[in-house]
Amino acid sequence: MKLETFQPKPIGVSKKKNESVQGLISRFKRVVGESNILTDYRESLVYEKPSKKKRLAKKKARLLMKRQLRVDKKLF
Image: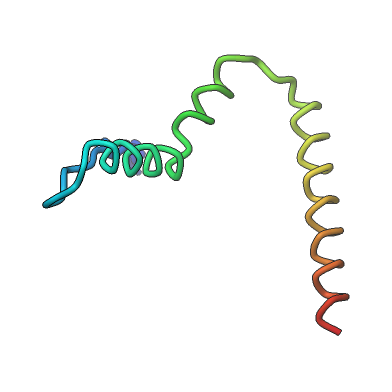
């Protein structure tokens, strides 16, 4: 069985007709932000203990559950 290697796709934007440089830069920033490249890079700079990762994941799940309960209550 051959292992598939992940090949990231390079991010780039091309200038559209009648687009300003500021518009091009803001579109590039949006594309980079949606791809989560910077957040992944920042996370890789600092080591985080596995126990802390689990604790934060549980906390995030609790917050999402509370938020969903609030939304469900508003619907009724």
